[in-house]
Every structure is written in structure tokens, then in C-alpha cells.
Length: 578
Image (cartoon, rainbow, N blue to C red; front, side):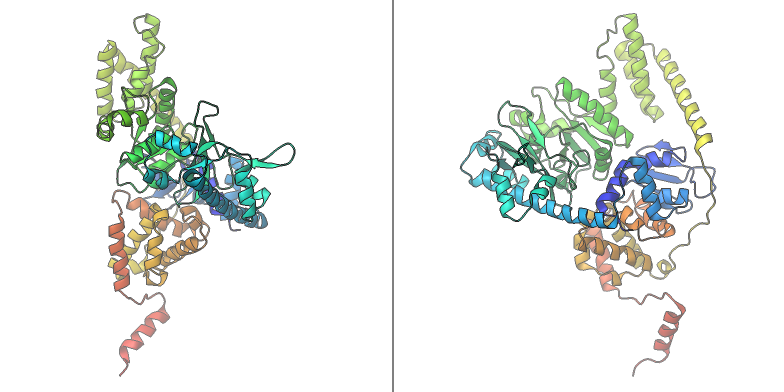
């Protein structure tokens, strides 16, 4: 059974690696990752690491590795299809059959085409249509022509079925328009446009495909923003606005803004590393996705009450995936768009540099709704700050915040330390209890290394770095397939993985560990999962991969794989051509 990349992505999104693994073993947080005693071989100290950012695991002891499907396969001794079915049942997803999978794939292709044509229609209507209200609105918001073109902004006409009629003439069916959510059906059975009299923001995925739209009114009418509903290619809880631009930024941090206009204003000011959620609070899947592209988040939400509440929720989400977070403090403006207009991009850059950390933000909010001058207020405040302080893992860092908190609210430092220590002991006791109940131990022999790697050390290292780049940056690796062939790979396993990447590109399928799980054995998945795991602390750049590609292009070796191959090579050397 072959599953679509979309369905496998749904499985991974609905079944976080750390959640599923936590059902079998006791996980211990270490920075952005989790560690545990490996369930696939006997050990006394943890050597298995769970990586929430890539939704994968790897054991540095025995070499086991893969994604959540591989984990369940090995834990439950299941075939790939059975592991997928088990995870689908756990998450409430329905496994498609072959015919249904083909139908869904065809529908997705048609929806992508509809979205592309719709985006072009809105853009032409904005720039060349008779109704200039959309263009006037964007100009009033100080957007430059190049920014409008960059984001492909558009305008939905103030009419009931102009877009619908246009798409039907292009050969799309009514059912396809409804599935793409660019049209609705009235009670009388007639189709009408989903968006009318709104400035339109195409939502583009990391592969450059238009997957949905956001529409904003130009007055005070409600709803202010309207987004595409869930479709076979779009889920607002799994995607982020402007990630297609932000992913290519050289910055180590990313800015999380509250809405489309904030993102565009920040990008126009010279900060491409900015994204926004799509009308909802940030989801666990979005937080995990952002860890793939940045090492730190700066939350730049509005300074009003709703914005501060959203900031707290975002802090919690990023804490769950181990992402360091800072908070932008704006004064004199309610949001980044207004701040940049009033004070300029350089002041905004300074604001980013001065962004405070999430711990201080959470500690400052502990006082909300309380009167620390009363005994009851003081007790409640103490409970809140102790809860925040016990979440700080580094003892030295915890000590700094503990002293600051004690001084700020005139709480006895000794009392605060005692309460924190008590809660830490309680937390440690709970973790120990779970460890005794949860750890499962099995024995497996260490995996053999690739024999060819010792013969062709230079080439095998280059191949590893290339595969690392493919796994970490699959959406930015098409150029490699244009300059390299699978036959140029020395290591047979790496050759097969590169062939799988080429096949994904040919079929416009997402390349991932989940895709490889359907074509590689468990041992092979461990070897491939180990590549990005071992290279995590060594940034892989396009320039380096260009050199690696050149190594494989320059060196033409005969891969010796069998006794027959060896015999043939020896005979050629003994009887050279005259």
C-alpha cells in the first residue's frame, strides 16, 4: 500500500514523535530535545534522542532511528502499513484505499491549479481592474509596488460570481471549486464567490504552491479577516503566512507577528524572517515546523490585552518544543506595522535586539489580577512565580531569576528557594515513578557500518552531507537533482535514497523520513536517520553542498559490491587492453 505524502504528513502532525514515544518510555527534556533509555537495546544511561523539530528519533548507542511510524513499527513488530493504520486509528484519521488515494491525488492537483488561477485573477483585478478600492487601500497602508508583487496581493471584486464564472470557463467543475473553497453553494443551488470586496492575501507553502487565501475588509465590517476553510491542500493550523520567504532568511531567529499586514510591513522594512499564524493561536504543529527554520523566536504580537494573552499561549507552545523565546516590547505603537511607520526600520531593529526573554515576561504577568500588598495576594503570587521558576532547567539561570523575583516583590529569598526546591523534588519524584513504569528494554545487535565508506571515505562523507541537506532542506534541494545522478553515489544505500528523492521530485511528492519509511528497512532507516542526527551541530550550507556535488562529479569510481564485481575488476587489471 502506497500512501500520499499528504496523508503521511497528517499522520506525523496528529501523532507527535515525543507524544507517541512517551507512551512507551520515560522521556527527559534536555534543551530542545528529549532523551530516553533506548527501547531497542539494553542500556543504563539514555542514548536515544527524540528530536521534536524534525519529528524523528535516533539512538547513538545502537543506531536505531526513523520517524514516528518507524518507532511504532519496531515497538509493536508491525509492517509499515499496519503501523500507519494503528497511528491513524489512534488519531482518528481514515486510511485511504488505493482508488480513494488516486482520486484525492487528482483532486489535490486540480485544487492547486484552481488556487494558482484564482491568485492570478485577484492580482489582475487589483492592478488592472476598474474598482480601485483595493489598490487604494494597500497604498494607504504604505505598501510599495514591489511588495504588492512579491506577495501577489489581490482584490476580490464586489460581485457575487465573477470569479466563479471565470474558473468555470477555464474548465474547472463546480465540485472542484467547492472543494477548493473558492466558491459556496446557495440554498437555491447556485454557486457564488467565497470572497467579495476584500483585499486578498495568497497563502503559499514552502514549495511555492498557493494553498489558500486570506481576505481583509477595507472598513470596520466583520469579520475583519476571512480565511480559506480546510481543504485537501490547506489546513490553517498546519501552515504559516510568509514562511515561503522566511525559510530562506540567513537569520538564526524568526519573528512571529499577529497578522498579514504586520508580516508584510516587517518584511518590507528589511526583515524577511517573519511569519504569522492564519487567524488562530499558534498550534503545536506550527511551533514544531518553525523549529526547522530557526533557533530562536521573537514574538511580536499586539500590545493590547488580547495580544498579551496570545503571547503567553505562544510561549507555552514554543516551550513544549524546546524553542528559546523572546518578547518584543513596543511603546508608542500598538503593533509592529504602526511602530515601523512612526519610528522607522532601524528603531525596529533595535527593538528586536532589546527583546526580553520569555521568563521575565511570564514572571511579570504573575502579578496580574492580584494585590501583592495583601496576604492572600502575596500567597497566590508566590505560587505563581514558583511554578514559573521550577520550569527553568539550568540551576544557575534559575538562581538569577529567583534573586530578581525576590527583590522585585520583597519575598524572602530563603522562602522562595525552599518552595522551588520542594516543587522540584516533587517533580523529580513523579519522573522517577514514570521511569520505573515506562521503560521497556529489548536487545538488538549494533548495526554494521557501510563497508564502502572506508574504501571511498572522501566520497562517502560528501554523500552524507548531501543527504543531510536533502533531509533538512527538502524544499530547497531541487537544484541538486539537476546537477547529480544517483549513479554517481558510491554507497548503495545512499544511492537508493537519492533515487527516492529524484522520484519524489518527479511526482511532486514531499521528500521526508516518512516517505523513506515505506521503501527502507528498519536498519536502513536507522542509518539514514543517523545522518541529520550526527550532523545537527554542524550547519550545512548550499555552498558546502556545491563542493560535495563537485566531489562526486569529479571522482568516477567503480563500486565493488559483490565477489563477481571484484573478480571482474581483477581480470581487467590482469589483462589490460592493448
